[in-house]
Length: 226
Image 1 (tube, rainbow, N blue to C red):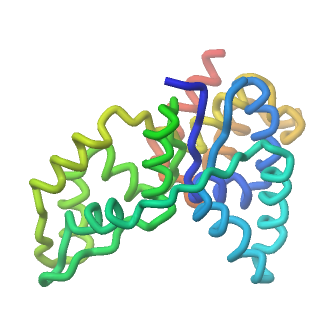
Image 2 (image 1 turned 45 degrees about the vertical axis):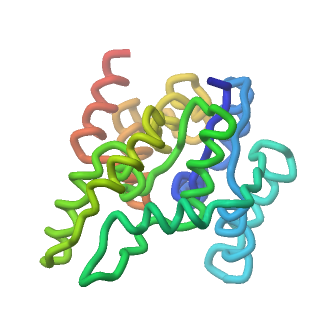
């Protein structure tokens, strides 16, 4: 296992929309390893939003992180077979459900290729695929109120192939950054630690990070102890 974290678009977007991208610079120095994204994820974070008014600023900020080597771009040439296989696990009325996208699959392959230490992803779907794919099936049926076909053979093969992947979220990265004092300049001293961590976690949650209210309360209790 190497000192490498692979980032999905969802986690970078959560940080970008909360004005926290620069924290990645200090985190990477502290980590003394590599922060990696796939080529498709780079396009999602830079090329696509650059052509919009709403997220053009964030696209330019992410591009600067790439230019400065904070985020390293890795290209994967052959991911389509894996993409088609994974998206065949669930189907509706005989049609495969396209639940994961090429960037997410590229990230998984890069994780394996580089023997990375962690996969940073905020989006709940990918995390359920990796952590509890049966729960993903139940969630889909509850959400859509329809019978979803579940290819258990494919699911087992997917789990076998991508077993042992360590999943992190932006909230956990920012909790570490907060503990290490990397966010000190982001908060007024008028507010206590519990209020600061509450604001931080809710900001991430409301902008894409799948973190529960119970987990936010847990983070608040942890800072209170310290």
